[in-house]
Length: 560
Image (cartoon, rainbow, N blue to C red):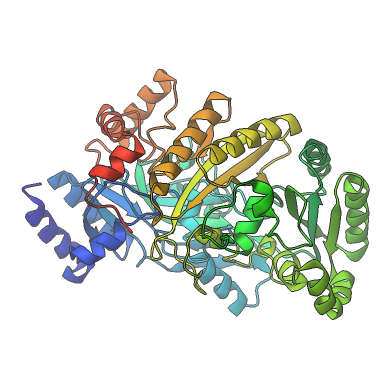
């Protein structure tokens, strides 16, 4: 990049010298992910508003720079802030952190990319709002816009955030301003209320794409129900799982369970969220799953799956009926079924000490997760994110940050039909693959609709342990490839999985190439990020597809 110095000088003129960063220590932080890679960050550029973003894109076109936009960089397990290809500049939108508009009556908020789940939760609490945003199982300091653009999962009635947003403002690869939905009509009262436009819609083209840089979005919020109830259940055996799934699907069809309001975790996922790996006396992994899972709290032991769900009711009478229907549907097929509501919580808390002694589990944890501070009501939590420290041999810190702490983490996100037979087949592939590579199958499913489950498989490993980096990467690749071959496609891809998750339809890939050339003719925005149809990107990703052992052996820039 012989003109890099001139390009950086032009960028400093746009955003200010202090916001164009080239110090090696900072670039190393931005180039750190939870897995090995070779992709360098050339510089970091930090604009403060959409006008600066447009000028940065124009500079990028003039000097043929490649910009990798990030919001908060908490995409842990899928690449963090790391570009898909080498030699990009990271366009950090974290300074753009304004909450631009809010309506209690109509239930929406308009935000910039730097606004986090924690920031919005505190904003709404400060206004004593009855509204909440669907939060993720990931970090509270992740970006709402970043999560929506990746079609990330949220919990509760508006959890499918990519379908619960509108009025996107974005900058194309040409530097043009794009406004989606009804925004081109300049009707401010209606623009935040509807995602479709008159004629072809630009909205969907900006999700999981590298066509433009999104700088603003309106997100719809949910209203707190009159009565909220959290549900905890355990499935007694693998054979019982299909029956439980059929009952849960029926409850969702009947409207008792809302979309994204029921999650099933296997025992490994639950264990990794509650504790770190309980290494034996010799510091080695256990020889069998039974030995490892024996360390689960007694109140949860013996069940291969645990479910957490939420009921949103309009009145006490409504809540009683839904609770009764839930118990009737599931009672014969689950080993434990606890519904947290006002009366049950008031009875559980005085018995907290006794329950802890007998069951080995403090009920206050479940009360917080499923009732008083439930993420199903928009309360962000680090409970699930803590599983990134599962195999680390140092203690989990009070505030988690897997990149900072050198955690090893891969995510595999796929779609599964909401049918028991499919879930058993899908879970068997994940479990077999993880165990083949000497790792634990950490699996969760979320009810996206009565037809589809989203699966999130986590590969957590110790980056300091000999051979685990290579084993984890091989495990990730094998999981994704085997699931796709079995008919379970990815819903979301990471830096490490773009090359593996390419669609096989050549006409589709050619169309992606044509669209990319229209929005971004010089390929300045996030090359390789879901634009695998371009020949240059396909070539680069194919070249990077070396075996994990070869990658780790030859890379001089492995983070962590």
